[in-house]
Amino acid sequence: MLLEQTMEKLNAMKLFGMAKAFREWNDAPKKQELSVADFVGFLADAEWMSRENRKLQLRLAAARFKQQACVEDIDYGHARGLSKSVMLELSSSRWVQQRQNVILTGHTGLGKSYLACALGQKACRDGFSVVYRRAPRLFDELAAARGDGSYATLLKRLAKTNVLVLDDFGLESLTAQHRKDLLELLDDRYDSGSTIITSQLEPKDWHAVIGDPTLADAICDRLVHNAHRIKLGESESIRKSAANLTSKPKQSK
Image (cartoon, rainbow, N blue to C red; front, side, top):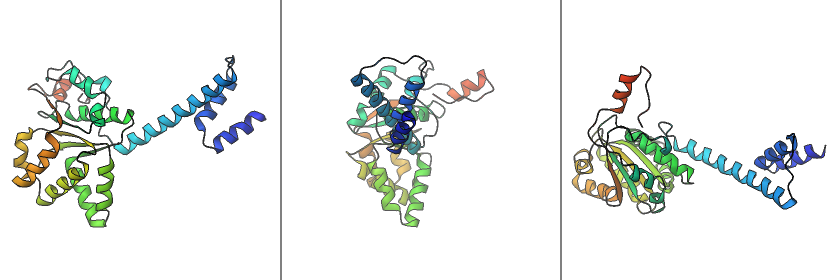
């Protein structure tokens, strides 16, 4: 009876990790003998881990990644010029702490989105907030927010995010409103957050899709000057290679 009362109190105080660990310890056929200090430490560790896991799941859900990806599963065997040492360095998330950017470029099918999601997922695991959006979807979202009056709120939320993943940038030429929105967003995030951007175009070619030369200079300056550049080399599409091996589609890594 005392156990159930204790469990009720722990759950009422939202100490769910501690309650679960206490229940499992009590139900174990052979209980580990612990001192009072060690037992309290055991319960505290369980509660801390439970809360950290819950926060991680919330960060991952808020990020809305395009695909499940992690840095440990990156394929370095495909001949696309991906440096393992560079990816291992980026996997430390020090670039996020230093508010630097990552630019991933290369032809379609080489796994740019997977790499971006993998770095974003690692940032989530390291305690940083992340938002993933395809560039066209982000512009649609900003337009909708402008229409319903939540534009300033959305910009503020994006500005506070530690890492913004902007996927498929440059697929279409930007409109005048797109240029203004992008500059506004990047200006709010400048020196306060990091951006991962993927594109089939090299940064030297971005001016053409951005349009206005003055705004293009300002946008590129905020993205490129402090960025880690990863250019994936000429090779066969990973998706195409996978299709030749199996009829089941695989994610590009």
